[in-house]
Length: 414
Image 1 (cartoon, rainbow, N blue to C red):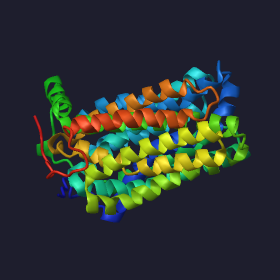
Image 2 (image 1 turned 90 degrees about the vertical axis):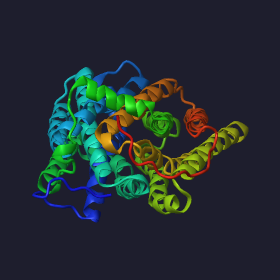
Image 3 (image 1 turned 120 degrees about the vertical axis):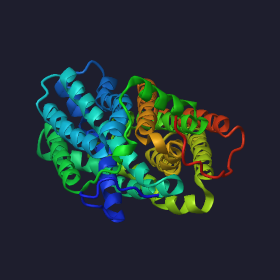
Image 4 (image 1 turned 180 degrees about the vertical axis):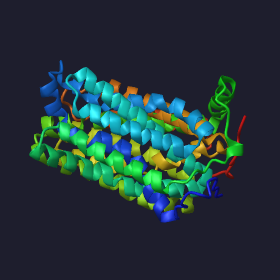
């Protein structure tokens, strides 16, 4: 299904659309991962109370990112995808500038939360725009292709952050993000067309908004696969929040941290690249269910190996790589399944999906990461627990009938 509501604007061809979607989606990963090498320096400069407090630089962003998505979905359904995305990039540039000049840890966290809010608006707008154009398996293919490109962000971002730290203070990392925001906003202004026709725009009346959110929450498939995404990303956020402490503090690898972190991002990107072919062959549900089962098995195996023979850097990295490879078959497919029945309320659905999966994941990450005491097995323990919960949610969602496909249900609306 393809919709083009704004014929006067340039029409992106498929390769540019994928690249643009990837660039917008990368805003979140880039904003988080580029900061990881600088967390120690930020903690020292800002005199945080404890070693774990500096994790708030990550979690403040993710909480703002999650909560704000509730509001921007209805706004994109009312005013269109392009206007929301342009406003989001402008706000992101402002937040990056505030971060550069932050004089206190509290102000930095506020600026990070604003960055998260603006990134949320961009994410909602681009996801709704993609849903305007595509649905079902085709949407998953677009998500996979864009994810493959966007995975360059977590692979390259820590190295970029480390390189900036070698030449300048940590504030210059935010200057880099400022430039990225300006470039993304310029691309959107010049090339993005509106995909929501005037006749399909929804009212901002509270009754209309609540009815859309209620329709999302009442749909077992949409709610279930959103919760699956939430708990697994919660374990992933715990890994993000503790990565610098684990690699630098526990394994003492110093400036090699970006390389170790990138090692985990590469398998995720490989899985995302293969996902489009896997989905066509096996279907969305089988891919998600198999990915969850693999995460459980890998995490349990790592914990058993660590307790039996002791932890080591190679064993830890292998476990992370395998886990993130399996996660690459869950993320885009679970999102596609959650959005599949929501064609008539794509903006509100993207909001609800993003709010629940991201805010809930951030809170889970805070809970798990706050218990870090130097034991690197915390990461696998988190993935094991969240994987088991995700499997139970999938079991409930599919009413006990896992690893099977059903015909796509493309539309559901209040």
